[in-house]
Image (cartoon, rainbow, N blue to C red):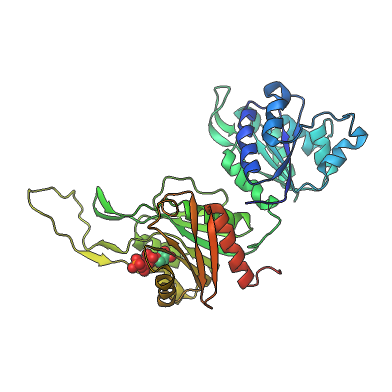
Length: 401
Ligand code: CTP
């Protein structure tokens, strides 16, 4: 995904600074221009050369750099989409909260009107100190500032409690809505279903499929980046849900049906990406079935077709399904779209091993109710999600083109 965005990344003197390398890598992968601004103390923890190499940009630190002159802080913060401070020490937060401008980073914050996202990292006592909490409250009360709060756990100093820098992927996800120039889904409510369902036959055995949830999770992540309020209804998977998304965990198709149809309110969009098991066992045994030397016959029952029920419910403004096919891709998908009375269907060929189930890549085409077809070349699941939302937003006239 390529977005023409500029990020001023403020780095302060916390032990957690080593984690910023991974964060820089995530931003660069999305082609985001990074302007690294390091406080003097942060340079004692990590070499500017390392930051410079990863960010592919020089590090700024000196208030009165020869080339920039006395207006360096103003020049740097101009045209920036977001100022992200990660990790942010108690000291830097305190200085910003009281309007101080004693180094290049605090001066740039004061001299700019760009939104500021702060990821604190410090000792638990420092974080829980009323002074720090008051500084955080003070800044949170201003529209321009938001925080991604630290996690609890064991801290570098050996103490246990809140103060550990938030998860790097979460900091990245929390930043992305500011960096995408296109708020395609701004103000929209989106429900995404993802992953497989499991139909248990007894307490230890189930019927399922190899869906990893990657496509659905990327859909939820990107919808959030694009400004939507996102609910993710997910079957059991082993990946972490994206930041800022409401998650409802389910196991069986019946539970998924209830979660989707009973989700509170009306949604602009339902993206039904889950690989729902078509059958369940007629009977779920409460005790483990023992073998007895002979064969075992079990009766299956059809599961409800959730997307068809969603279409009947009139709860969703636009409904898109996914069809994993092995033959006659277009005909099978078009037939499914009609049968399920939905607005669009994304079809892909699961007979190929390099795309779809469990893979990082996908390829396919989107068939719309009006018979138009959009081909999506092999791309990362994230790019595919963006493409799908762009096409839907265009058709629904959610954005002026
Ligand atoms: N789907 C659903 N409920 C089901 C089965 C499928 O909501 N019980 C949804 C899927 O999430 C997907 C779409 O329907 O968006 C198509 O899924 P697919 O398994 O291809 O459709 P089926 O109707 O099960 O058709 P097939 O006989 O090819 O498996």
